[in-house]
Image (cartoon, rainbow over all chains, first blue to last red; front, side):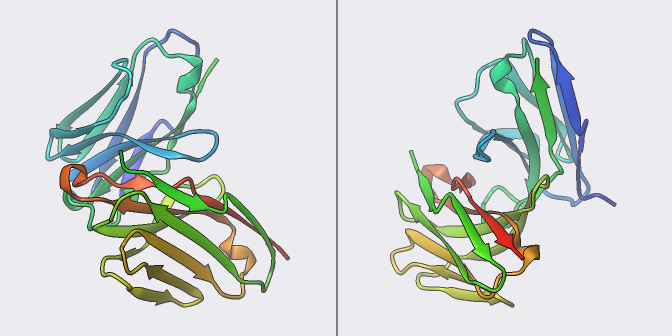
Length: 114
Length: 113
């Protein structure tokens, strides 16, 4: 049973489209995250939710909107996709909002905007 | 804001050689974590260090946290081809950054058989 699962694994889409990435964790963790990994492998936090409440919102274009319907799910919707949005997006979870716990990452969604 | 720098960016070694990656933070850290990402994979948590001067070992891997809690290192003894991947450190500064883990740029390790 996958602990943190993301769908889809690959996403190829045209500029200007709107797309969503879904994430689910079955670990019972309270906190979930979205990270973006660029072509140079740099991992940058985008958002974090703790028990459905947004607690971290980094400088991210407002075309990106996270939604957490419950603490086991964190989705990411992207409007008006741009070429620069191409990256691998990782969902992660941890037991609580304090980062004294290792994060469990999903397998990633490779987004390619053409 | 908090910055975590990691060097070297790339390291190529022959199998059996040792490998070290270094991590430096612009601010004092509450804790530091290390992750490994295999090619095409996702980051996997390796270990966490919390105390000043702490040293932890996992088989051939040795992790250290500096006395000032601003730097850390990962040393692999006698590398194997299974060690290939990108190694990330990630730190939490606490305070207003509570709950936010900032990752270093990673060190990409290649091991030649």
